[in-house]
Amino acid sequence: MDRVSIKQIPKNDRPRERLAEKGAPNLKDSELLAILLGTGVEGKSALDISLQILKKYSKRRILRLSFRDLSGIKGIGPAKACVILASQEFIKRALDLGEETLPVIKSAKDVVAQAVYMRDKTREHFMAIYLNGRNQMVFKKPMFVGTLNTNLVHPREIFAEALKQNAACVIFAHNHPSGDPEPSKNDFEITNRLVEAGKIMGIDVLDHIIITKTKVFSFKEKGLIA
Image (cartoon, rainbow, N blue to C red; front, side, top):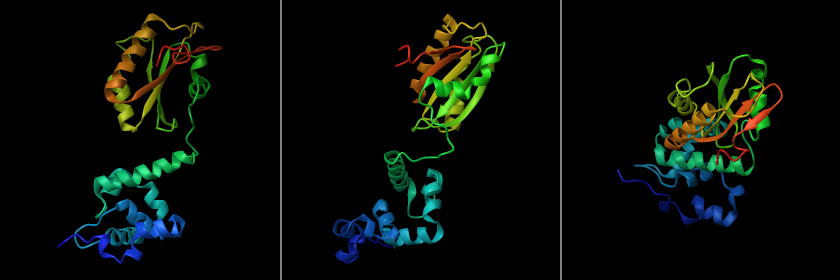
């Protein structure tokens, strides 16, 4: 069976032509979705597919579907799923929308707020804070306890969690019970090792914060992390 094209629909009824002539606000939901889909499949046009999808899923539900969910819908597939997800994300970023329940991490102060429990610890604690592309914290996890060294802090465990959480970037925090926030030789070695591992994995290390009872040291603010 041949693929049905939107070009077979009368020109005045085609979604793209209607958008150009009447503007996006005047199009139906199915027409907007059909434009994102672009092409149909055997026996169905993009408009047919969009109508079927909207019968099964509400608009809000579509916004919550993952790549796997979308690409598994007959008539969408991986390439069209990417177009839909990318368009949604672009609009959210342009309007500064997102999950209101997710805290935004923009500064060392924001990191300290997530790791404040470390201030009074008598042993060193190391935490990884995982962020999405909008610098929203999607997950945080205490990773190690004890005097930090390169044998204790394993990039494999840290970045395995990053992949699990679909994180775009990560920030590290640990405490100095001594009260001195200046990084030790081990701190520099660990940070450099994690930054290099992040480059290999395609996950940016944004900062490493050292916390004491009264002070904070940021590798990024000191120009030690690009």
